[in-house]
Figure 1 (cartoon, rainbow, N blue to C red):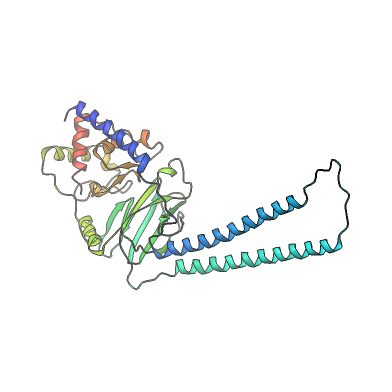
Figure 2 (tube, rainbow, N blue to C red):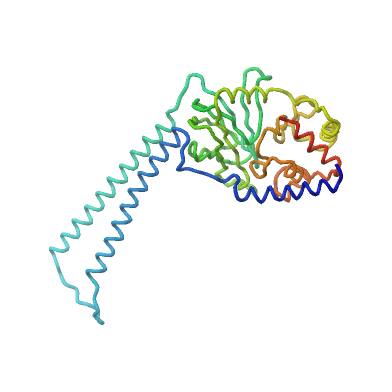
Length: 343
């Protein structure tokens, strides 16, 4: 395609970014649970909410009553009147309020411990294991297997079967990150040099957005991910597709795009299985076209957005680890066409 055609695609890219701002990632629904752990957390939230609402209403009512009873139009300070009976009533009221407060806080503590046990109590004899590694600023997702050729590696998009217990193994490659999918479970910190694990289960199919919840640098706000919950059969089909190497391009332009990929800086950072590109510094791109978003949920995975990201990622996501790639328009078009074949 010509250079002029490429600039039209760039306009589409900017439109895609504008639409994303209005309706893309960031829809964190803590009060819309999709699994048992999030349901327990929501229950505790509402219990505490109603307790605090009652406390707030009683406090405001007490202040209003006291203000109404002591209202006076006197221009001079009123004399202090001793009222032993009133003092005894006040002492009793304050003591009762303190006792109720302590008992309420203790009840909340007990409910919090019980909820924490329920959240951590999910187990299974044969769970699906997924490893999540936090990077500045993207998520590496690995489905480990004893057979190396059966290991699935992807980025920023976690597929899980509905109704099945999942154990997530987490760690960080650089700084402290925090894995948080509000509709699924609470926040989990990822510490450099330290591995941890926790369980999730999703009972409703859908796409659930998540976010890094621990400030981890300049692009912390653009470190999102998606959890795609689907039927067991759909998950098995997705996993089978992910195990395949990249297909050989059938048309001339994608074939040229593969050559551009393998002769420029792309292969220094990325893997495309079935080609000579095998670096693990950046996300695995073997099945890039199957993902709905790119750049850790920063952009929609469209032709224009992908072209803009390749040419100048620093303008879109300043400080990220990807360098600009000033390609010729024809080379860029061919490269985008090739990446679009990686389903």
